[in-house]
Amino acid sequence: MRWFDKKTVVLCVAFITVFLLAVSAARLQNRYPLMAGIAATVMAPVDFVFSGMAGGLQQGLGFTRDVAAVYRENQALRAENQELRHVVFQLTEKAAENERLQAMLDFRSKAVAFQLKAATVVGRDPGTFSYSVLINQGLRDGVRTNMPVVTAQGLVGHIMESYPGTAKVRLLVDAGSAAAAMVQRPQSRAVGIVEGSSIQAFVLRMKNLTRDGDVIKGDKIMTSGFGGIYPKGLLIGEVSDVADDDGGLLKHAIIRPSVDFSRIEEVFVIVGEKAPAQP
Image (cartoon, rainbow, N blue to C red):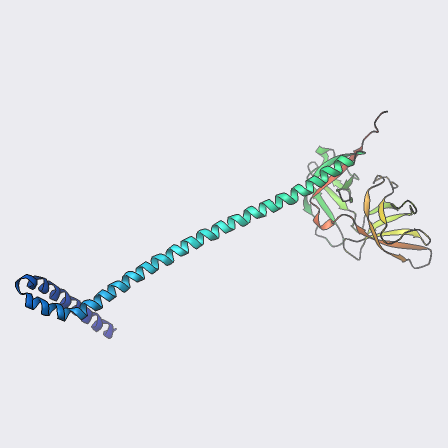
């Protein structure tokens, strides 16, 4: 601290001395040219040092301003980049939504036999092997218990409970769900019961198939219309494997669902069947 004080005093004295010499040189310049020249010669090294310090200080200030300008520009570019990313995200999401809705419109135009009520999934049951979703249509919209629920890809499940403005859908892959089904292939038409698996997530099992039933890998499975809940002809999935049951009389098929149950966002509720057109 003492050294710092002494250094400060020395610098102040030097500055005052230089200032006085500069004033004296200015006064002597006209009266005593020779003395002024000598003073200028003596002051030259000091003037050079102080000029260098002033130039360095000016350059330092200019560099600081440039750094500040680059920083502000960088922040502006970051904000613009973030905004562009948000716009791209919104456009991508909108494109995905338009694709889903277009598929639903195409399905609705082809499903001429049914009265359909469009609904959006607003909640999910996080349970293990107990699958259900909540939709934003309910009793006020004509949605009742046991009504089938579908997407453009195939059968989703049925209405388990209906409330004034929402309804709970039991998914077909739920361990407690079941649907009467049959093989779509004309040469087969084998029938059985499709149910959710309590062992594998999002896997279906078609049981009660006779040992000589004509079911092979790749067969399409659809609802048979038996049982009173699901109408005939709703696509369930595709056979991925066939195995004999213990006992030797029956066999079962493993079905890969046509619906991706982990990505359901919009569905149709079949609220009724359309009357056939009069000839």
